[in-house]
Structures are given as structure tokens and as C-alpha cells.
Length: 243
Image 1 (cartoon, rainbow, N blue to C red):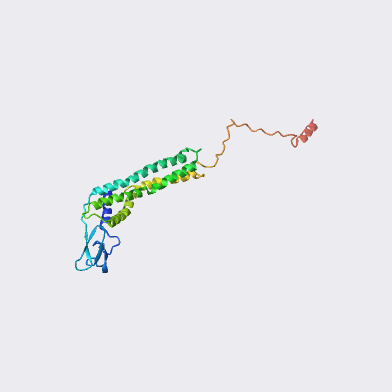
Image 2: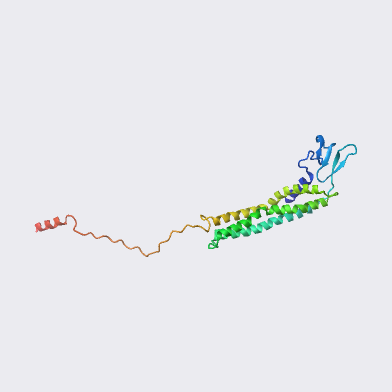
């Protein structure tokens, strides 16, 4: 699948004319849209041959020798950016998870630590794109080196612009750049948790104190009632009369 996608890039980069009037003739400027008889200039990797009988000409595609090693070398160089990004983002992810998940460094300046990790992680989002863009120049040189007439500077620029557009897509899909995006995104979420007092290690809530155990419960002491109960005087008087 990866090799097929890379060959697709080659097809669009070398065989298309993006905004041309005559995309299938290699002509990019023709009077009255007549690509066959009134062409005035050609696309990249096409040679313009003027007519001897008028002011127009024909476009002939250059003969190029293609080699799959061009694309394999390009892919191998491009994916280096993804590998570096995964390694760095994994390290930052582990460092950010230590205070949040393990309670490490609670007595340290965690907010400054989280800000440093967040700043380090931001460029990682663009690392696969930068690597893909840097390898485009080498790929264009290989392509032009395999063509019979080489490439003009204008043709090289057109090739670079076309390949750049597709290489960005490949870098974040078949080049596994999405893994860098995921790891860097999780790192930034953890740095936010470090600085958040409601859920991170900087929480300000205090636990409810636990009362110490005081042994077995003491029995309740009944209160003593002072005075004589109601009716006791009448009972004493009745006893006297009875005797």
C-alpha cells in the first residue's frame, strides 16, 4: 500500500498540469483553447517545438528513466522525522505523567516544569512535515537526473510544489506522523492537569481528619433524680392510719 501511494505521487507530480488549458497535451497556454495547433508554451518535463509555418508549436514529453529506489530513498529519509518525533514525544509524555499519575515532584515548581514540557512538545507537531519538505529537493534532483533533457529551474520548482503537497499527506498517514500527533497531544493534556489545582498534583483540598481510636465505648451514666416521687407522702400517711 505504501509503495502504491508513493507511485501515485509520482503520477500526479510528473504527468499532470494543474491549471492548464490542455492537461493531456502538455500545453499550458494555447490560443482559443486549441491545444493541438495553437499551443504557445508547455508544462514541466515537456519540450516546446515551434512550428516552421506559424507562431505556435507542439509539446513533447521528455523521456525519463524511472527507478523505484528514488521513492524508497525519499520515504526512508522522510520517516526519520517521524521517528525522532515519536522518541521525543514519548519522553515528554513519561515526564508529564510522573507528577499526575505517580505523585512525583510534588514539592517542586511543577507549573514551570509543565510549561517547559509544553514548549518542547509544540514543535513536534510539525516535525513530520518539516522532514518531508526537506527531502523533496533530493527527490526532484533524482527525478530530473533520470530525464533525457534534465529539468529547468522552473520545472524543478513545479515538481517541488506538487510533491510537497502530497508528501505532507504521506508523512502523516503512511509515514506514521499521526503517532507523533497523538503522543504530543496527550503530553499537552497532562501538562494542563499538572497546572490544574482541581485534578492534578497541585490540588488544594485537604482530607477530613480522622479521629483517633479511644478504645471500647463507655456505658452511659444515668442521671440521678433528687427529691421524692409524687404520691410518696400520701402513701406514708395511709400506712400510719392503718397501724
